[in-house]
Length: 196
Image (cartoon, rainbow, N blue to C red):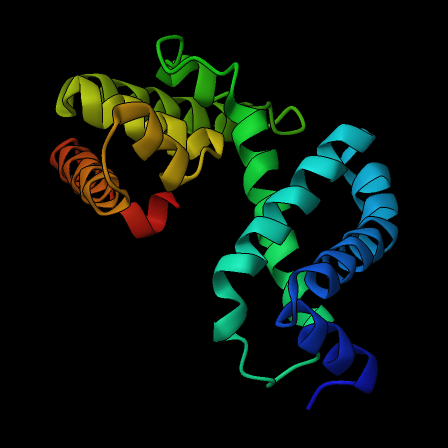
């Protein structure tokens, strides 16, 4: 069940052109006021980023208004759309200057020393070297790059965009890469449960 204020806004959005324009203007200001400060303080974005997210949210609202079922407050539904759009855009921005060409196993696997324990450091180094070697020899170039990008924290959607592929195809690619990596490590004599 949604609030009376939300109900009035929702009805205005479904109304005549002038009423709709006023409702969208009101919704725009409400979104900027409620989301802007949090986005700016948490993600260090500027006003133009907030405006872009709000405008994109309003476009989505126009397209999806008939899908609102009233299971939550209308503004809560609007905010959930805005949050998804903002986080998606932040993810895209994060990876926009990131090059897949520069990814290597050495750049992804930086193993810290463990408080001076020589034996433990040696074991960690041996495992790390074996994983790096397996990544370089047991995987195809595409599998290697996708898996390293995933290990760096890149989302499956972003990897798919870079490869001009689908999310499902990249999931399959990285799944196969992990299986090939595990198989190669087992062949080298590593018990994965014990190693992890």
